[in-house]
Image 1 (cartoon, helix red, strand yellow):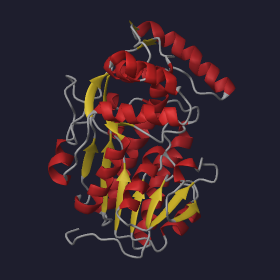
Image 2 (cartoon, one colour):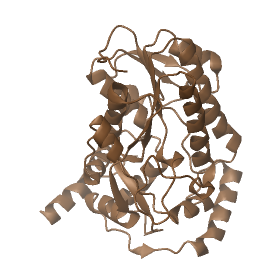
Image 3 (cartoon, helix red, strand yellow):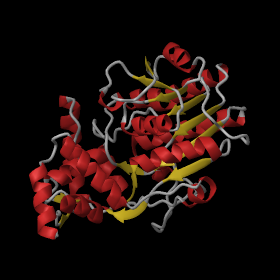
Length: 349
């Protein structure tokens, strides 16, 4: 798209608008005056929708009729919704949402005459370097890079989106890394890590490397992709590459807790992960640890946002800002106590 993009009367659809990234994207669009249509599931927690202007519509990525209603009359679509879990008892259920639902929504958008789609992929769909150096959008893929159903589903969905782009759909792909910040209510797997470290309930950790980014910076990257992205191109929306020990240490310290000191080896944890998965399947709960989590920890998941910075003007802030805002949000919601934060501020002043 070469002409300047300005809001008009036609709505912009945001799928997954009640979720962590979706709500941040919706807020960023609202600030720029885009009229919104906010799609969420009937069972979604509406907290993140509070104060957001626009039409609310109930939809489900496994219900094609609801998707056709959602895109009708829309100018733009931000497809943010996804099933993001690191343990899935039924892989087919995640595939129906992340692959089948994405394909159905984008086809419906094309049929409805939507001008441009921004598809929220993930760095989970990208390749990793052999030496642990930051990967980018051109890093080659191997099967070992896509551990677990979530990564596999996002990789397959990205292939489907690229095929639709090749068929004439104006779609830009963005690949967020690991977002942290306010509004992670569910929470996501990363949000659970932040919560547990802030509560002092992470006595040990398995070392790995991650790219941490503020969720609001990811949202800004989505808007930049709409305004300046090239059709069929993908852009990593990341932040700062850090070792997990540094991340959880930063979280714990900011929350007035002692950082975890015990680094656990991966191999002896595999049998324990098997037991946790078995128990999770029996009880319908989320396991604390899985074999896929441990396999992923063997690789440094470092990424470069150089392309988005150069092509879009993307400007991510330091990871410490994301952690601070996430902890402030946990305090506001009563997840961690304000007095402990105040005590840490006095102690370190």
